[in-house]
Length: 572
Image (cartoon, rainbow, N blue to C red; front, side, top):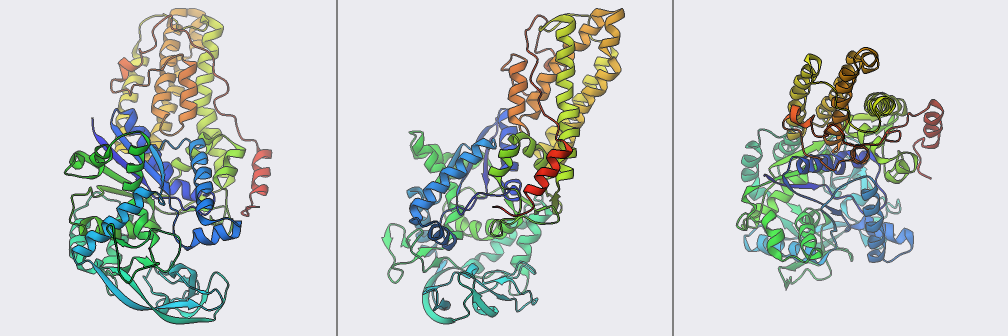
């Protein structure tokens, strides 16, 4: 039994996430977690709300709430939606937790002890009209490198160059739009990432199995221009982890907090510590996942994220872990995703464009969305959600192939043999051919899932469903029944077992439908089919079942047109 640690990039606290956020991190992470549990591995699947930084303060102010109260409320909202989408976190924590405060301060202290923290007096942009220092992301202007007019103070999304706010041409506050800005001096802590550049470069170069998307972004940040730069890890804000050197005050840093991008990845560890406490366990329960001197040396750690999060997870967070000099577990594999676009444009939380998770669930059950998103995951390039494609995929894959198979088999059996698995004759050449096909395809499916090739796994799963339908058409039990009822019964006996097999294999993608099919087959045997022939004998002759309700209803043209108009890219 392998031990698999899985983390998803933390969803930010300021509102409900859209489908592009979901497919870029949490959903494929859940797919991998469910698959590994199905294979019998020990899994720790961790996520949390990312609650610090200026956006949280501004969202709370807009809502007319204290920021702590706002974050607590939105955490519960996000946790509820995640649960309804079938995201099977072992724990969904909060970056504002006491555990994360302590760990963040601990890491900062260790980095300082190892001469990897520098106190820097720097000039920072202050908005006179807003009455505050502006964090990097709340200053926009023209990129000095490529001329893009919407560059932020920390990075230009157009050319991906790292920037400082003072680099921008014609900057303005995104809070108020004011250009009444001035540069004031303030003191901050910087993580001396540049001292670890060679170490990080060697470590990333050793990850030959990582997606090209992940390593190319990391290498670009390491080597382009001036290469890896030191990064400020403190901010002049009220809300966040107070700056301390371990558990001691940090002279000169009074009133400051750690930068959200410093403490957020540490929350992966913090949330696991939250899990241990919530379950009445001691520190050893979470340390065995995170400390290589406490049992984590045999853990495989996999992270899931959108490509915009890659630099922080390949460089800054590893620099924190390595720089501490302590035996913390480093990530083994980073699965990164491109962007999912929406119907001719981009999903955007800030602009309210696209379908959001709560809206999606108000239209259709989660499995419809899970299937489409995962089978169209933006792995090798950006992908696009269109209502026409969504309708076609649901109708053809879920309704016509999987749902139709379960319906035809169970209803035919009920009409000819009753609601029990029939005895019938022994399996013949057609059945053996199907078993051989399934054996090959399930091995391929397992390989794609092990390798986190999401779209290939979905394609293979659909092919497994199709194989059963093709067998049913060829075997034609409705025709056999007239001449040889025992032969027809054998076809149906295998096909009922195939429904159970489909439920088990499909559970990582469509868990609710899987559970419904297992319940209809009157079994809780969800063991993974390592031996296909044996798996297709799980339900013996005489085993009772029920005919399931419609597994997946088709989406009509009228529904598609209604939704296309209703969700034309603006969240009301």
